[in-house]
Length: 160
Image (tube, rainbow, N blue to C red; front, side):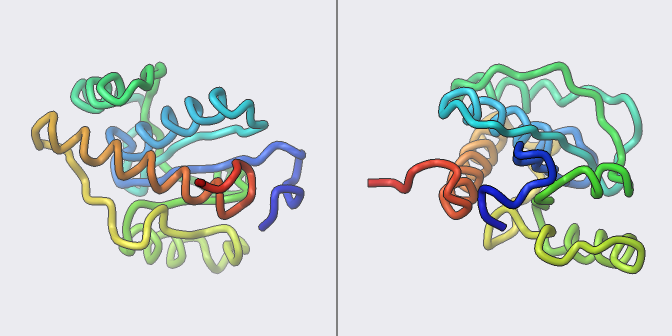
């Protein structure tokens, strides 16, 4: 996918983790922050493969975002569904398990080819139940991976 290959002209990214309480809402907030910083036409959402409706982001995830200079947004968890997958130009998941789960559950109904990928080469582990330092480590990994994707898509300039 290149910068011009979107449905609306605006790049739509869906971030997916398990519970939609830590990693994917942090990714959503970080991507919004990057979009503001680079003045990008980017729309982001998040969901979970096993999420319940209406749970807030964990307080440690919010603290980790603030620690890296990103303001948390009002977030309430939601499960991934066909509507969200169809909405997205790019679906970025946190682990190989998420890739397998979405491919199994939706691959027969939806064309996920060229839109479903892992956010990073290695799994981004769930910090749920961990320390603030673990959440900050995860938030930094997510930020670095998002920047790498946006450079790959030529949405932001390469690093010098």
